Length: 320
Image (tube, rainbow, N blue to C red; front, side, top):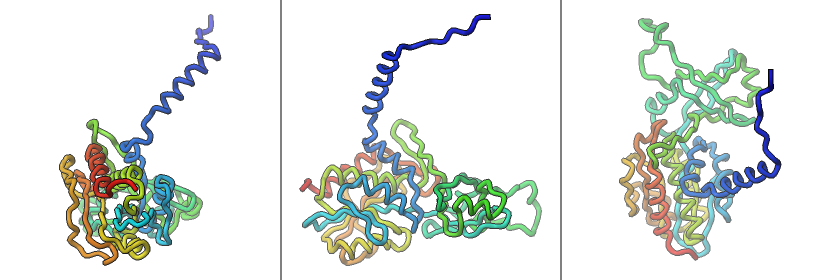
């Protein structure tokens, strides 16, 4: 029985093929705003645990530094204007580890329960332990075994009801994963592009807004100070720290995501109704509209992201 024929290629052909692949890879728009938006949308930054997101942003914004609270900021000599975008997101932390390896969770500041906690039921999550991210899934209570039993709560699912499975069968195995109390927990981030110009994922609008700010800052140079702030969901502590450290400013522009229909972006900043630190001066806000805001399938338009970057750049003024 004869052997099957196997195609053989000369070394020169293989080198040429690799060269074509290399040129194609070099032409991939990895530095485009759309690619940057997808990259930031894959990040997780639970309020109070934004260090990894800051590590990503620091090299992307030349001249920036991290302050003691964790904000990533770049000053502008003589500029009295500030553009700020929040980094953090509502999430959960590990509350405890049971002897059988199941993990309990507690919510962090942000969206009120039960809206946020109901997203957690049966969801894939990522736990950020001391040894890196650990995938897990939240157990779902069996409706077949609990139906009709009066000793079980019939109310909405909450974080107190959640049991997280990390594939461990003991507390010791969980500890070997580097997971313990206070380890941050987020929904698994898998940004999904669809419809030619739409991008969906948990907290994608805030990440996309930061991508627009970064793009504008790179184009406009140091025409205004730029800050990616932490703990926005915790009484805007990061923004207040930037105001004290870098202010005073005449004007501050807050760029964030919010509920709205894609394609309805308003290019002119709206006045901020709530009072802020006096060092921030006059405060305005640009909001990237997001469909299904606050849900795991929050959706933004990449066309809106480009328009937001242009609006932020216009507000910053000419490069200096």
